[in-house]
Length: 78
Image (cartoon, rainbow, N blue to C red; front, side, top):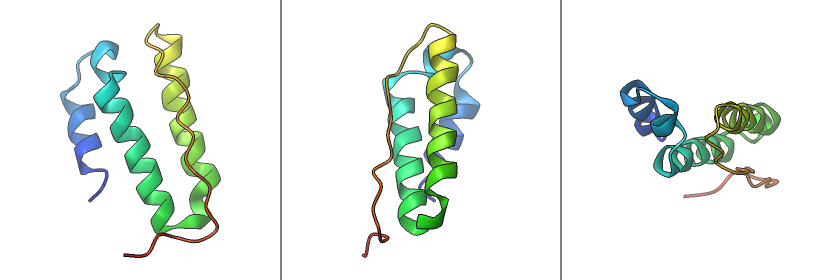
């Protein structure tokens, strides 16, 4: 649901210039944040996934900067 756009972007990107672009980085952040809001027990694992994305982009000379998922004590309510 909230990560569908990220999956589409990942399959559409053919290089790191695309994979590490601002719009895709925003999707990575949104996906991780939304997953966390729906399952707060996954905070560490989700932040680790986002950190791997950041490190991968940086190691390929396309730094995206830090993308810290906000830590909250309770999931968001609708």
